[in-house]
Image 1 (tube, rainbow over the protein chains, first blue to last red):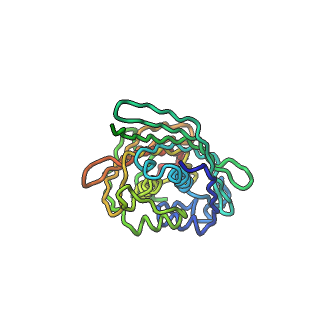
Image 2: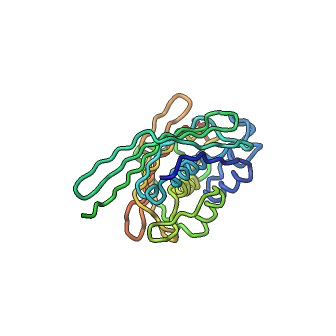
Image 3: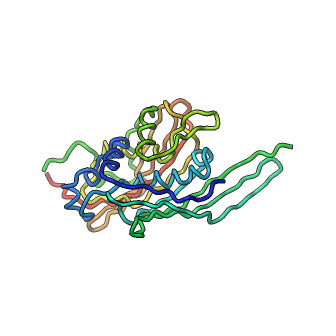
Length: 138
Length: 142
């Protein structure tokens, strides 16, 4: 298992625009600065799903293919990420539980994940779980 | 102001199922996504390039957003993703979307949308996601 190295991502408007193109989510709050200036956020914000993607990448670096097969994640958005922000995505293993039968060992790992910006403001939190089943060869 | 032909979430009820969406996940789409996200290539145990769960969840929301109207001030509150299996690139998927919960408050609406994504070829489930949105109420006249 890999260690829990913090993932760092810099957010700028080009990145947000590129994400809007590839995801298909072109809501003006993300891509139209004159529209977004009048919103409660006073400017454009990154897509919440971009943060979800970073959390998913974080878990993929630890568990690889198992993450795509059995992973589950629940993300709460606390504050918006904005152009100019540098995001740090970090996490810790909270609980690992192993159950064994004659033929399989099932390991459940639960994580607590966080995303902060360069000012230490809380952008998002998540809980993630992955279940790995290994067959025992006799 | 005239309202567009898009579906207005405030006008549809809990339990509503959107028309099923079919879409193709191409190699270019995934490589573009990985480039934007500064993400590493993901390979299955057989060596095939696979679709990251975050990418798949993002595309499905993008597909739905092209069919619904989200008023200014709408906020994405939370997102849950449950993987059920790997999806290799160059596969067609079915996306089923339903309104799981909807509660109307004085000036906003809380909506939970559930997405079920299956492979068209096998009908095997690959992902289930739940998106919770807060949508400000809009005037429905005109």
